[in-house]
Structure formats: C-alpha cells, structure tokens
Image (cartoon, rainbow, N blue to C red; front, side, top):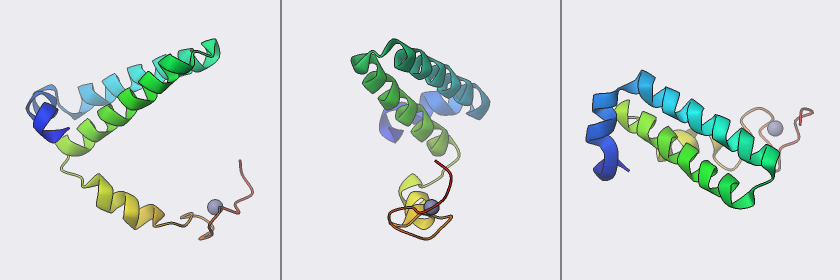
Length: 87
Ligand SMILES: [Zn+2]
C-alpha cells in the first residue's frame, strides 16, 4: 500500500482520507442491507485499504500496533476466545 499510494495519500492528507474511509463504510452498510455478498467483500477490502492509507500517512506500523493490542487475546477481558458480556 505504501509503494502504491503513499505519495497520493500524503498529498490528500489525513482528514480527506478519513472521509474516503467513511464513504466506503457507508457503501459497506448499503451492501449489507442489499445482501450483496460480492459488493460486501469489495467494500471490506476498500475499508482495509483506506485504513492502511491513514496509518501510512501517520507512520503507524499497523502490524506492531495490532499485535500490541490484540496479541491473541481480547484486550478487555484478556481471554481467548473473548468472554466479554457485550456482543
Ligand atoms: Zn473480551
């Protein structure tokens, strides 16, 4: 993602890139309501791509950050699988 889009992402900036992510989330919601599995898959990938773009702009190492927070256990209840009351 960095090689592919970092220059464009940096020019666009964080705020406008977050708006792109929100746009994709709206498209995912619409796809879920329509029960369009192909479109749902597409929108999930777009959401991940825009999220990684935001991380790249902000120089966040997502792999390390993810492992730091979720390292095989739920960060709230520290269990695997999660045993939190909320769904
Ligand atoms: Zn939990």
